[in-house]
Length: 427
Ligand SMILES: Cc1cc2nc3c(=O)[nH]c(=O)nc-3n(C[C@H](O)[C@H](O)[C@H](O)COP(=O)(O)OP(=O)(O)OC[C@H]3O[C@@H](n4cnc5c(N)ncnc54)[C@H](O)[C@@H]3O)c2cc1C
Image 1 (cartoon, rainbow, N blue to C red):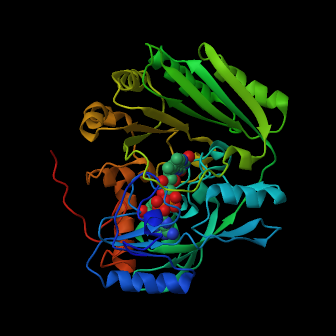
Image 2 (image 1 turned 180 degrees about the vertical axis):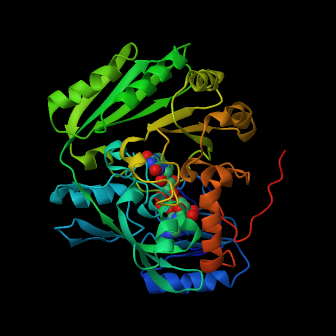
């Protein structure tokens, strides 16, 4: 599709970002993906890769370049019921995956939103509502098929192209276009899901108490927190909490400590099928808001972090401040087992703002609290963020693989790992 085509307005932008690519290619199978990549690399224009278009960084669209949009590769196929092996196309959305797995009594921890695509999330990590029990989405990945920069289509798993398989799980977007993923999914019944609204005007104290409660909770409990700026002097925290159990007594025992963290303003707790928790929203993409985000991975909600977070939230520089619980099973995997290395983080923090300069002024002094970043939540273009995403041993290994698999740096639309290091100019 090109500018002027009737359907171009529907494909030019992604969920959060406006774009005006010169050409959007929509291959229908791996062979066509290879043709698209081969054509795109012959053109001296930017190349973006898109699965479902929910990239927060907005790198799945561009201005004047080519977008390879693999949303048509959205099949979900059970390969083996005994081993719960499922093959999923990158264009599928997590709401569709949850619905397709439900009849088997299965689920795959993904994120908190059913509209997000399998391609973007699984090439980065996957911090989801079942995360403390089941780990990251990539921890369930058993194989991936990719079209590489030279147009070849390869399989990567623990035995075949094992180094590429390591790289796909955290930095996959630097190495090719994934055309299929194979996962081992989990048995998951109905789960407890609660939405609690609490007065968090005592913001630092509230965050400290919430952080401690989350770390003390059994692994079956994963809580996500959202705050906006103060209204009439009051800060409200929304807690979305999943308890991987269908037993009402267990669910209530997990929720009580969270409900006691501050004055309770509203509550709803239900026992739901997992697809109801990550339901599929309206799929239209209208480049909503063009937000700036800053993010970090945190080991503990320390008093110093909580005090800085209170200043940020009350200062009005962020309209959406979110902390997702990690830890639990995520930390069972060794830091060098996948290209996602930040296994000791118990929390993923992100702040959405309207002004880059104002958010940076508030956020930069907070950087020292963080042990790294999760690329999917970050829009900061400064090159030093790459070092936050990939610690030195991981980055070195990724660069060596980049020299082997993509020496001309064809795939560079997202947290680019250049084959040779680019000097970082500070200041
Ligand atoms: C509302 C919302 C909620 C979210 N919640 C969570 C959450 O709870 N947990 C979480 O972990 N993340 C979450 N995310 C972040 C999300 O995982 C990333 O933004 C992800 O990249 C979106 O995937 P996509 O396929 O929809 O994106 P796209 O915009 O299609 O792609 C984003 C980038 O991923 C890469 N990519 C996409 N497809 C492929 C492919 N087939 N092969 C290689 N590279 C590819 C490209 O670099 C592309 O620029 C959320 C995002 C949104 C907008």
